[in-house]
Length: 506
Image 1 (cartoon, rainbow, N blue to C red):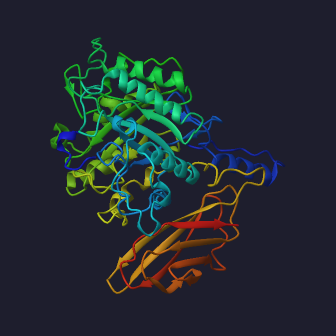
Image 2: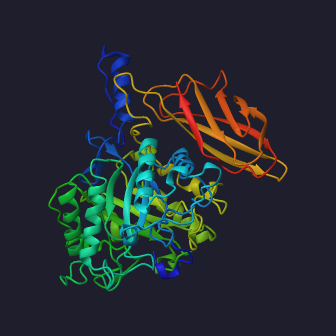
């Protein structure tokens, strides 16, 4: 998007024909295989992204920014524990995190700031460098079954750059740092890809042949450098602003791919990425067209959709967002979500996406979270419901298959639904993150203050000091793989913030 406007830093699953006599066991095996889609590193085939076993997957995720700012770390850790944020992302149905960063975090000794360590929050991040914090986030996301795409958002925390290099951060530094990250996470398939540079724009060109401005050539150089270190990664290449006199969003113009495709040394690793925004970011001519919003599919086809529709490569809309305050923006988002192809109809044979943003402090779009960094903008999140997609197998400690019988694992997401000062109500959603059905579950958390549970429904509880243990009721302990159960409670006094929660499954 136009960073000058930012006020804040910022398959269809194939029908399985089971032969008569194959029995329920074969059907269950097939279902388990489908449920496990996403395991390992990914590669491309035509317009689809496939997992290590060749099963199609769909990126349906969220941008969580902050590593690219002067905080040198994802935002919101001044308010919450990072694990509770990731748990909440998963509970809402997002399966991938696009994580922007700047080259500043790769400087020796780069440290994060604005992290709250009180009352046990983010305790395992104390004293860590920015990269070590990133390691912890990657580790926990992988356990929870989320994938991560690293996004080289800025050369430094000062702001977005039109080209992939600046006087202070030359191309050699850019490439060296990309290779360093590729090596750092080599063998960790939670990190499935790298977005080489965010939103190249004028004077960046595509296919012009000028090595100082031709983003397509630079992307080939950087992409091949990354693949020389880790040939398993997906390489995400964004568009530019202008091509043959036609201008659009920063990073959103991929018209040049038709004449000048990116060529990588390792086949089946290239994903093209576009960005698209609404009027809360900037006006574009198509918003005032009398045929709006019916004109939008043709606009998207022209700029980037044709790549998918002609089966050239997968297309990932790495950023799109809006405050939703105007009727135009509401129509735009509804039209775009429909264009991205509903999962119920098309499965993983669809466009990929990561919404901008999780953060509420994106000035011209806002976020999925509200300003308290806890409450969900359910209207905005609701627009995305039809294009959300299944999550992926978790890594060690979080739903990793444990043999033929599978493993029991769960996650819990805690949210405050109301707080009136003298008391509050909250809900906890328990999700089966394993590969076999749960028989029972237990959720534990510790409040930072003097809160007490006054009543609880759909679960039983005990409380010792500030620590609460909730166990399933008789009717909601059995949770199928991928399923969920919820319980709620009232507490007093008010100020019931969101603590870090743990879930134990049997």
